[in-house]
Image (cartoon, rainbow, N blue to C red):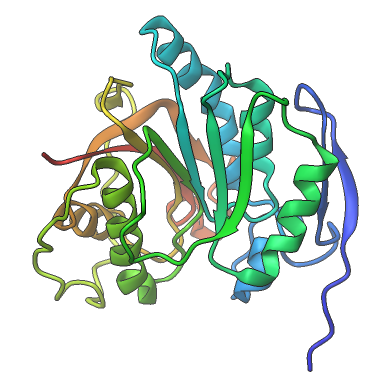
Length: 272
């Protein structure tokens, strides 16, 4: 039997209010930075990844857009919550009503005690109902949400089938309507390493009244265009990059990795 990883408690004072988290030590391969090493699902869920920070970085503009249109987020779902960082920031900053529900989910049951512990370290507002739970992708969700989000949910080329399961879950959560899947033959197809990313200035996601999904996506070895194709075949249209949601992990072209590790936050809506 493997030894459970040793965790440490850290204070992230760059957020308002500051956030305390239990996570893998910073010296660990997955502590607080991305790595090219393959990591098991448990260690991945016990770490902070760039995508989570990027998603938090664009949340203020999303919340402001919702406020300007008098849109209230009543049912919110996070996929792949891991340490809970993104959800904790959200419930610390989102305007809430007595009907606001936030579900923080992860597909790795061993991660849930950590997620619950971190929620307890950062108590949510009394008027907000926050629920941590296990959620496996692929099935139809029992209810719909007007906002679903996730950070760094996709990693390797072999994740094609997982992407389809993810898309089906998101689709059911946004619309509640069954969708007839299209061609799935590309799920395991090895694409060219020539990735095409929309220019941030040209394709901007706009928050509308329609329920939407935000995905903080880091291109490692899963092709950007294949992601869009699979989502589209499952009834989700990519409406563009979130404004300000385009990042480069490396300032310089370190060992040719800048192209491989381009970050962006994408917006999706259900195809009617």
